[in-house]
Length: 250
Image 1 (cartoon, rainbow, N blue to C red):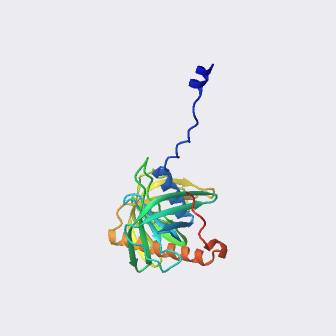
Image 2 (cartoon, rainbow, N blue to C red):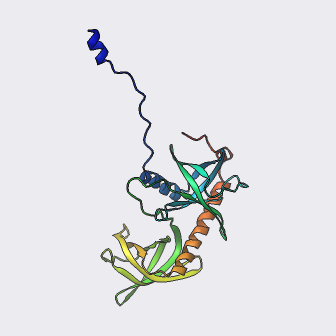
Image 3 (cartoon, rainbow, N blue to C red):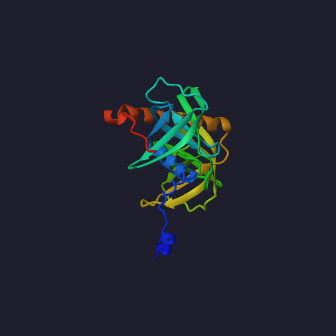
C-alpha cells in the first residue's frame, strides 16, 4: 500500500505561464483600437502616458502613435515601452520599443515596433474619412458614370450609384475623379466588392491602382490631419476621471 501510495502520488506543480499573445491577435486588436479611436496606455521608464494609434503598418512592422499625453516627455529611439490596448472590458498588453520620433507639419508622432511575427499577418489598417456631400465620376468602357463618394481611405474609396450596375469584382473604374478637402484626385480603381442596397442603388468598394506617389502621400497627409484633429477633440472632451492612466496588467 505504501509502495502504491508513494508512486501513485504526483506532486503538485505550478501551471506554466501563459504563452505571449500571437502577433496576429495583437494586430487585430490594434486595428480595432485605431478604428474606434481608443486611447492606449504606455509605460516608459516607469512613467505612464496615453496616446492614440494613427496607423498599423504591417509591412514595416511598426505602429504609428500620436504625441504622448501628458506632454513634455521626449522618448528616445531604442527605449522599451509597455503598450496596453483597452477595448471595452478587454485589455491586451505587449512589449515594444521606440523606433523613431518624427516632427512634422501634423505635429509629433512616435513609431513603435510590432512584436516578433507569430501566426499570420493582418492587412494594413485603414482609417476612412466620411464624405457627406462629395461626388465622383468614372468611366466603364465608353460610359461615364456619376456617383456619390461615401468615404475614402489612403487605399481606396466607397461609391454609391443611383442605379444598379452589375460589374464583376476586379473590374476597373477608369478615369476616377474625386475631391478630398479641396484637393482633386484622378486615378483608376479596381472593384473589390459590390452590392445593391435596400434603395436599389449600387455600392462599390474600390482600391486605387495607379494613384501617383506624390498624390498618394498628399491623400495620406490629409487623412492623417483629420484623424489627428478628431483624436485631439476626443481627448479634450474626455471626462476628467478618464484622463488618469489605469494600472497596467502584468
